[in-house]
Length: 166
Image 1 (cartoon, rainbow, N blue to C red):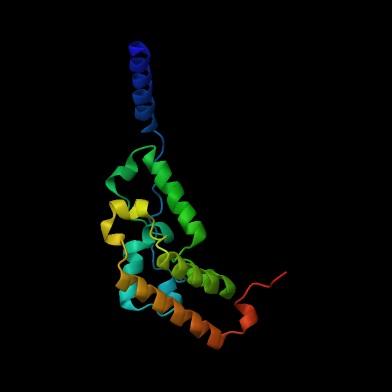
Image 2 (cartoon, one colour):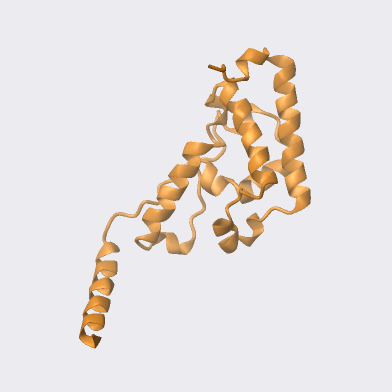
């Protein structure tokens, strides 16, 4: 049994060492503020913009501040997959490119996710303590989202903001 454990441990160490030669996946180093970013497309108060940058942009924009351990495989691959999944759900850098309907819906989701403590993820705030949202920050985001959604309702026809029911 000891020989098996020793052989298995050595094999795992060798695999992890060889994995370091795989290409790193940390390529989300674009500009978070692009022509279609949410801050360019809509009025985002400074306090809300700061919250979004601290608590959301690493996974939901075109710019991620990678931690030191992001260059270690398999963590690099895992982080990149996580970021790509987050951007697939919501990308603040591309928000202005979304249809009105999608923007309206994503704003609703932002509010829900924040109010229900689903975002930012606890696995993220565990390492990035400053990303945790306090009640004041949650209220600031919800208030901004609700005001922005209300402004959409005033400017655009209702059928351009809601999904058509089947």
